[in-house]
Amino acid sequence: MTLAKAGNGKIPATVITGFLGAGKTTMIRNILQNAGGRRIALIINEFGDLGVDGDVLKGCGADACSEDDIIELTNGCICCTVADDFIPTMTKLLERENRPDHIVIETSGLALPQPLIAAFNWPDIRTQVTVDGVITVVDSAAVAAGRFADDHDKVDAARVEDDNLDHESPIEELFEDQLTAADLIVLNKTDLLDAAGLLFVRGEVAARTSRKPTMIEAKHGEVSAAILLGLGVGTEADIANRKSHHEMEHEAGEEHDHDEFESFVVELGPLADPVAFIETLKTVIVAHDILRIKGFADVPGKPMRLLIQGVGARIDQYFDRPWAAGEVRRTRLVVIGLHDMDETAVRAAIEAAVV
Ligand SMILES: Nc1nc2c(ncn2[C@@H]2O[C@H](COP(=O)(O)OP(=O)(O)OP(=O)(O)O)[C@@H](O)[C@H]2O)c(=O)[nH]1
Image 1 (cartoon, rainbow, N blue to C red):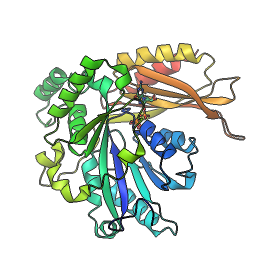
Image 2 (image 1 turned 60 degrees about the vertical axis):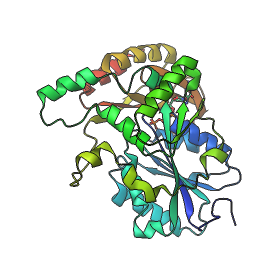
Image 3 (image 1 turned 90 degrees about the vertical axis):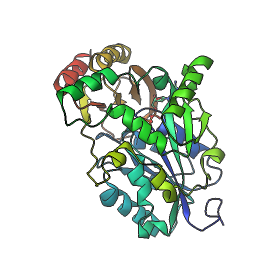
Image 4 (image 1 turned 180 degrees about the horizontal axis):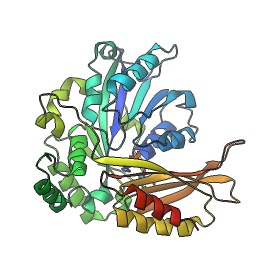
């Protein structure tokens, strides 16, 4: 008997959600490196056509999860592709001879967790897997900066111009939907806040969900796997209590979509001066209100590829692994923003940042 399959014999699945850049992949990396003997299968869903998260996790070489156990779902947000993508993937995973002890699912930062959790009530899935818990990762620094609450005026103005707009800010709504789904909330990035800031964030997060899930604080997603895995909730049975804004507004079953968000990939030449590039990139992010930029860069003369991670105007960069033999050295970034982002102008500005 393995650690995880104790109990009702079903394989536990942990759903990790949270807005763009909150630190989901970073936390999963920690889980894989401290899995306590569990064999973990990982299902990763990303918004945008560049599998950065999967690539980062494959590169971490943890024993708990081989490359074969990392499955990327790239056909859009998992909440919209449950039937076409998620269920067949789970079915295949469950047919494997060597089934995992635990399944970890990372949703895209723009996914509604509710349809995914509901999928665990599908007949073929329900008998074999249960949702161990839904963990929502929060970028505490972004909350403190008002990123999920500060565009009321803009939204109100848009609503005056367009009667069909039934949403509050799409970012705010999604943030609340992800909190509402949670069994455990991880207030991440506390290294970027002082005690008063953190107190504000706790209050703000608590005010945005009617449920009262436990909140814990973390830096760089460092939370023990013993806390994150084994919550034993069986969340799929409680889905009726965690309705998203969309479900409450459209009980009749209107389809949810991601029209409010846009993403595209920019392909660039080698970055001779990555420091200068990143400084300019910060100004482009602010000028165009870009939500997320991430990807890999070719820096001439360097044997390793440069990972670039932008969340709002904060950009991290580090060399994550050597370019493999025969691998084409490329610079590619995925850019994610609201639907009114001016793609042509953003592309031109990023291309001009390469010196
Ligand atoms: N300062 C700080 N940075 C962090 C922390 N956790 C994660 N980061 C950084 O935040 C950036 C985004 O982290 P990810 O783990 O990729 O976030 P994510 O939620 O998986 O992002 P998406 O999948 O794009 O939604 C990376 O540059 C991380 O290094 C933290 O606690 N403190």
